[in-house]
Structures are given as C-alpha cells and as structure tokens.
Image (cartoon, rainbow, N blue to C red; front, side, top):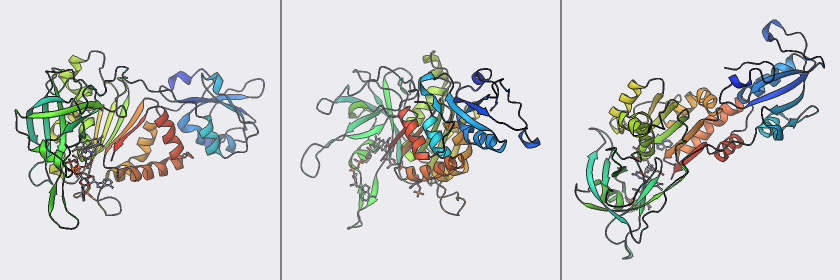
Length: 404
Ligand SMILES: Cc1cc2nc3c(=O)[nH]c(=O)nc-3n(C[C@H](O)[C@H](O)[C@H](O)COP(=O)(O)OP(=O)(O)OC[C@H]3O[C@@H](n4cnc5c(N)ncnc54)[C@H](O)[C@@H]3O)c2cc1C
Ligand SMILES: NC(=O)c1ccc[n+]([C@@H]2O[C@H](COP(=O)([O-])OP(=O)(O)OC[C@H]3O[C@@H](n4cnc5c(N)ncnc54)[C@H](OP(=O)(O)O)[C@@H]3O)[C@@H](O)[C@H]2O)c1
C-alpha cells in the first residue's frame, strides 16, 4: 500500500509501481486530518516518495498544508528528472510528462511466424470437433483440435493460424485464408506438442436484401469438419497478443464470444496441472482476471473448466461474466463487458498502475469504445488523461487489442 517516507527508505516497498520523489518546502503543521510525519531536512526541504497512482492526491495534500513542490523526479531514473518548482501548468499535464519512459515488457524472444504460407499450407487432420454452445444457447460454436505432428508448425499462446477453405470464391478464384485465434497452449490440448485448437463460431446472418440465411464459407467448413478430414493451415501469425514471460504478471482479459480463444490458451498455461509440469520455468503466481461477454448462459464457452479453475485458484483467477440477454446494466439495458468494466473501474485502474499488468481485449470491435469510456471516467477522477495513459501502456507493450 501507499506509504510516504524519506527518499530511498521506503521506495522499494512499493513493489511494481512507479515511484516519484517530491522535494517540498514550507509545509505547515499538519492538521488532525493530515497527520503524516514527513522527515524535514536542515535545508528546509522534505522528500516524499509517492507512487504514480497517488501523485494527484499527494499534490493536493501538500497544497492544503501550505507546502510548495520544488521538484518531482522518478526514483532511480537520473535522466528523467523533472524540475517543477515554478511550474504553473495544470497537474494533469505535469503528471503526464513526469511519467518515466515505460520499460518494455518481456515476452518470448523466439516468436514463430509464417512457417506455412498460403501457397504451401500445412495439411493437418481434424482430431476432434465438439459443440460448445449448450441447449437453449444462440448459434453454433465448435472446439476443434487438429493434428500437426507431421510438420514444423509451432506457435505461442495468443497467436493465430490461417485456414484455407476448399473451393472457389464468387470470381472462380481459390478461397482465401481466414484467420482464427489459437485456443490451445503451445503444447496443444494433449500437452504433447502435436496439436493446435480453435474455437469457431459459424457465421450466419440474414441477407439484408433477399432475407435469405447466409452461412460463412470458412466457419461453416470448420464447424462441419468430420474427424479424420484434412484441413489447410497457414501461419502462425501475430505478435500483439503474446503473454509476458513473467509468472508474477497480472493479466486483465476482456473477451466477447469466441474472443475467449487466446484467453483459454493463457489460462490453461497458467493453471492446468499438466501445463505446469511441462513448463518448469513458468509457474504462474500472478493474477488473471477474465471479463467475459456472452449473450446467454448456455453461450458461456468452456464454462465448466473456467469455473473449476476459478474454484481451484480463487486468489489467482477472477471470473466476471457479462451475460447480455439475461443481466441488466445500471441503466436497465443489456449487460455488456463495458458495463462490467465501469462497475469495477476503480479496481481495474489500480491494477493498471502496476508495471506488471497487461490488459488484453479480444472479440467484437464494438466493445472498445465502451471500455475506453468507462476507463476514461475513472482516469479523470485521478486527473489523468486516459488516451495518453493508454498510449503509454501500448508503448510499454501492456495494452493488447485484437478485435474486428
Ligand atoms: C485476428 C483474427 C482472429 C479471429 N479469430 C476468430 C476465432 O477465434 N473464432 C472465430 O469464430 N472467428 C475468428 N475470426 C473471424 C474469422 O477470421 C472469419 O472472419 C469468420 O469465421 C467468418 O469467416 P467465413 O468464411 O465464415 O465468412 P465469409 O464467407 O467470409 O463471410 C464474411 C462476410 O459476410 C458478410 N457479413 C458478415 N456478417 C454479416 C451481416 N450480419 N450482414 C451482412 N453481411 C455480413 C461480410 O461481407 C463479411 O465479410 C478472427 C478474425 C481475425 C481477423
Ligand atoms: N482476434 C479476433 O479478432 C477475434 C477472435 C475471436 C473472435 N472474433 C470475432 O469476434 C466476434 C465474437 O462474436 P461471437 O459470435 O463469438 O460472440 P457471441 O457469442 O455472439 O457474443 C458476443 C457478445 O458481445 C455482445 N456485444 C454485442 N455488441 C457489443 C458491443 N458493442 N459492445 C460490447 N458487447 C457487445 C453480444 O451481446 P448481444 O448480442 O446480446 O447484443 C454478446 O453478448 C465474432 O465476430 C468473431 O468472429 C475475433
């Protein structure tokens, strides 16, 4: 927790958060409400260590006590010193500028890409094809496992593969590939490094002019794939959604529908027993928080396994559903992911201050604006411009989005 004290003495106790040192003069006697024993130097300056997420409050407190800030500098960052003695800029601007250059989060160094290209795809075999939508749910979503043991295909959690459906398009040209997020860990669902899994919704919609039901080409091909059938695979692709290698990281995951695919891979890597044995260097001790938007309860993909993991690891895995057609938001409308983000905005904001926190968004593009709105409102309470803060997280490799 927050703790002010002499520069250097307490800084290391603020694990994970960026810490700044304020040099302050002119502090009056603290009122009863503002009791804090800042150590006063002979020069008249006091030095206060302040975590990033308390900067605004601390500035206000100092002002209340009649103090004047002579300088603000990041701890352990000599080249990022900011002198602000006579600074009359608004606090938000000062705060944004005082944030040190972000440290790039560590991810894998060996990232496989495009091992198989469309002109020479890998021919895998379907080993498993299972319905994931329960009775009374909407549409068809299938969990598919493909055998990849005969080639060089390998991948990391968070990557995608391409699937080339058979046949030709309306111009008589061979069908083009469609991308699908990989739903398994790098070791595959059987933890033998021989498979890759997908979570595929069959696209179906009414033609806007004819009213006829149209079924998507590739998603229908996959959802109807027989066990033993061949499937053309390309890739892998994508570096946006990789997991940090740090087992102490916090992963905030926001998914709609089949956007769960990469998060299934992360969660299996973090918590499944066989995975832990296969990855002695990655024993997850951090926090994973999944906020999952689905239309109805039977549409909760991988429900049983998610809830089992939650029960097994209550301190490390948090699970929040937004069931749009069963739950209501505060305004009485459909409960969407962004409504859950708004409900938990203070906690999410606090987590996002930690350098070890990564936020991931996957699924419908439509959710992005709502999530931004909810987090903007929370950031504003702390005097922070959300867009600027989000940019910093992106630069640090802590804000990951794959939507369309
Ligand atoms: C990075 C990435 C990862 C993805 N991961 C997944 C995943 O894990 N699981 C998954 O299921 N999907 C995923 N997708 C989507 C997937 O790539 C396909 O787009 C999807 O399966 C549809 O392909 P299709 O061949 O079935 O449809 P197509 O036959 O290609 O038809 C799609 C076309 O139909 C039209 N269309 C679609 N909806 C409507 C509508 N409501 N009204 C009118 N016209 C419409 C549009 O013209 C659209 O381009 C991902 C996409 C990307 C970019
Ligand atoms: N990496 C990627 O880019 C990637 C990966 C996987 C999937 N996808 C795509 O993501 C989409 C997910 O759809 P799905 O069919 O799998 O999911 P789904 O089961 O239909 O669930 C989607 C959920 O999101 C809600 N929703 C609709 N509009 C929203 C909005 N503007 N903001 C927040 N929530 C909203 C829906 O609510 P209501 O329907 O009740 O309004 C529903 O609860 C698909 O189009 C899929 O192809 C992309």
